[in-house]
Image (cartoon, rainbow, N blue to C red):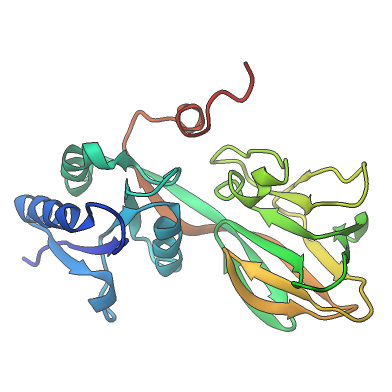
Length: 267
């Protein structure tokens, strides 16, 4: 009988990462797992993905697992580590539980973005922002055919619940609890006092229009520049389900995580 396979993603420049890799290999061996470095995985299929890093490393691993059912389990070697399951100090116990299958699964939704005829998938967010050294952007968006906002601004962000504590939060957008179906829309530095964020229902399709007659707008998916939204062009955004799977140890609720990572929302 073949061993179960786990992929290992590690942030190579994080402090203490070499020792952490050794601890991970020892835990995998104790539980009868084959541990494979992610960059050597080729076309193999994994039963579990272990990430040693922060939220950036977690997002990269989750994106790699799109289209699979492989759970992603993270040990925090970053700053916030909102998506990770355990802190570095508790990694040995956490890894023992992960390799024993003692975790809960969260199916993460995403956004499907169509720009200039090309489709992209986002786990966290998609942003439209003015180019460096260009003028102020002018963006509008429609929901199910109805124009909701038309604002001069630096840009616009559409975010899933998973990504709502990132760029969206910096724009004073709402935090969406994991499990909320739908997505948040917020403007970046709107040149108006009435530019408010909005939570969009999962079945509603959104269209973003670039009203600048000369300058294109950068389109970024999960922090990676993927396209330009040309002058007078529009992009389409749809909510999609089951994009990736996050493994978390039982007992830690989303709301407890908010308090630990960001502090009280009001006090």
